[in-house]
Image (tube, rainbow, N blue to C red):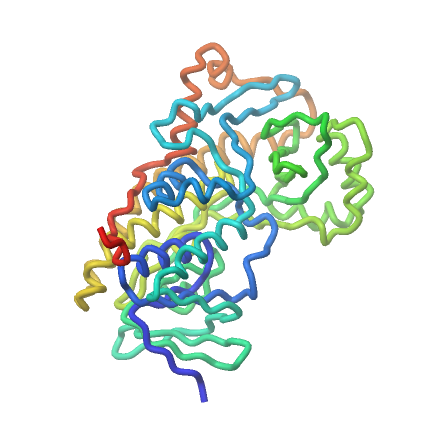
Length: 410
C-alpha cells in the first residue's frame, strides 16, 4: 500500500522557489513538505547567480553573514566584448541594496543552505528521491498529489499544492493550466574550463558574427556558455569534438590548449531555452510559481531572482490564510496578480533582447561587429550603467519578507 501523508502545504520541487517558500512557510509555523525528485542538489549549470534583491531577502531573514561565509565570487559589474571593443554595461555598486554585487555560488550550496535553515523549524519536512507523478483531484479541487520514492509510492493529502518543479513541471502538465509560448531563437551549451592565475577576473560576454560566448568567473574555473541558434546542437555535435574545441579555443583567446580539457560530450550540457508563462497560475488547491509558472530566457540570468520573489510573495500572501484554515482561490489569484506584472515586463525585455540583438548576431555569418550607438553611450555616460544593473540586480517589484518567525521569542 502507498504511504499516506497529510500536510497543510505540499511543494513539488526543491529548487530555489520551492525551498525558499518551504522555509518561509515553516518559519511562520505552517506544516510543509517539500518533495524533490533527485537524491541531492548536485547538478551542474543550474543557474548559480544570487542577485542583490535575493541577498536582501536573506538579510531580512538575518542570515546574510552566515550565507556569505559560503564560497562564492562577487561580481560588481558586467562587461561585454563586441568585435574588438570591451565595455561595461551594468554597474551594481550604486544599487539601493545591502549587497551591491551578484554572488556567484553553486546552486547546490544555495539549496543546501536553505534546507539547513528550514530544518531548524519543526514544521518543515524535505523528502529527497521523491518524484511527483500525478495530482489527486476531488470534486474539481486539487487535494494532494502522488509520488514515487525509493521506498515505494507516496500519497500526500494537502490543503495546498505548490508546483515549483521547474520549466518541465509535471504538476503544471497534469493540471492542464493554459500556457502562452513566447519563443526563443537560441539554445546554450554550458561547460567548464580551468581558470589559471594569469587569467582576467572579469565575468563577461563576447559577441562575434554568428556566435555569443559567456565567461563566468567561478574562482577555480570558468563557467562557459556558448549561445547557438535553436536546433543547432545536432550539427555541432555531428561535426565532432575536435571542431568544437577549436571553436572554443578561438573564442576564449587564452593562448593555450585549455579547450583540450573537453574530452567528452558528456562535459557539455545543452540548455534548451524556452520562454513561456501560464495565463492562469492556479486552480482550487494548486498554485504554480517560479519556472513552473514562467520559464525565463537566460538573458540577464534573472530566472532564479524571479523564482525567489515569487516564493516570498506567495509566503506573504498565503501564510495567514493557511494558518487559519481559510485559504481560498482568491488568495491564490492574488499571488498571480502580484507577480504577473514583473513577469510580463521581464519577459518582454528578454524577448526584445532576443529579437533585436541575439537573433541578428547569430544570423550574421561574416564581418566584424561594431558597437551600436546606444551601447556606446554606456562608455560616454557611466551613470547609464545603473539602469541595466537595476533591472538585472533588483528587477521589477522586488519582494520583502513579511511572514513572522514563530520560533523567535521576540
